[in-house]
Image (tube, rainbow, N blue to C red; front, side, top):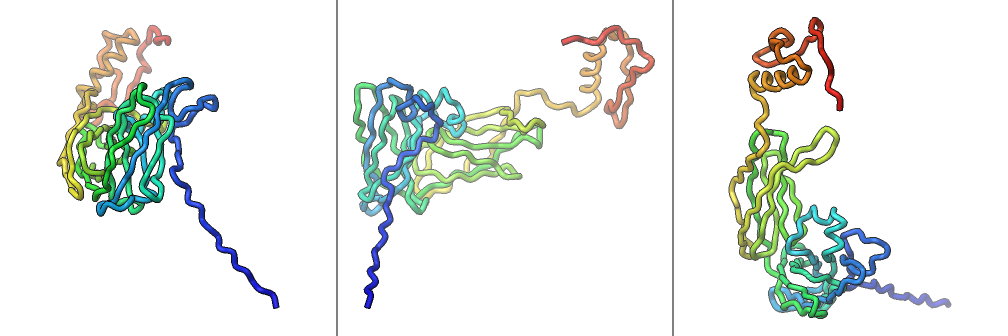
Length: 283
C-alpha cells in the first residue's frame, strides 16, 4: 500500500520590500539619489495602539515638500528619495539609500484604518538615522468643498505635502481625504482639461491644519479666484477682441457693425466679402 506524503507549502512573506516609485536611470545605483551621493539608512519600529508590533504595516517615505505630481519630474526624483516598504513581523522597518533632506514617513496598518506620521531629517554626516518609535492611531478625515470662480469646467484637486494623497473633487466640488493624526499642509488647486487632452493648472493655494485621531475635520468652503480674465459675458468683450482683429488686418477705420452679424447681443459671424484686406499677419 502506497503512502501519500503531504508536503506543506510555506508562503514566503516578503519583508521590507522596497519599491522605488520614481523611475531611475539604469546607471543610477542609489535609491532616488544621483550616483556618488552620500546616502543614509533609516530604521524604526511601529506599534499598534496596545503596544504590540504592527506587523507588515505599509511604510511610505516622502520628502517633506513632496506632492503627488512631484514623482513625474525626473529632476525631482534624482535629488530626493521616494520609497515604499513594509515592517517585518516585529514591526521593524529599514529604508536604505536615503539622500539628505527632510522627510515624512507614513505608516499605515494592513486594515488601512490606523496610521501615523513620523518626521525625520537626514544629514550627510549621519549615515544611520533611528526614527522614533511610533504607535498607529485611528485615521482622521479631512473634508471640504472647493468653489472655483468664472468657469464651471474647472475642476478641483487636493494633495497633501509629504504624503501620497491626490484626490479629485466630485461634481459638486466636495472632497474627502483620510490621513493620520497630526499637522498637514493641504495643496488645493484647480485645473481644466484642454481640448488636446492636456491638463492645465490654473490657480492653487495651501491650507495648514491639525487633526486628532479619528476626527472628521471639515475645512468648509474654499473659494479659489482665478487670476485669468473673466470670460466674455456680453457683446462688449466681443467688440474689444474684434477691434483688435481689425487693427491687425489694417482695417482700424472699418466700422465693426459693417463686418459683423449680431444675435442676442453677441457677435456670431464676420463677413469680409466687400472689404479689401491689405495683408494678413505673418508668423
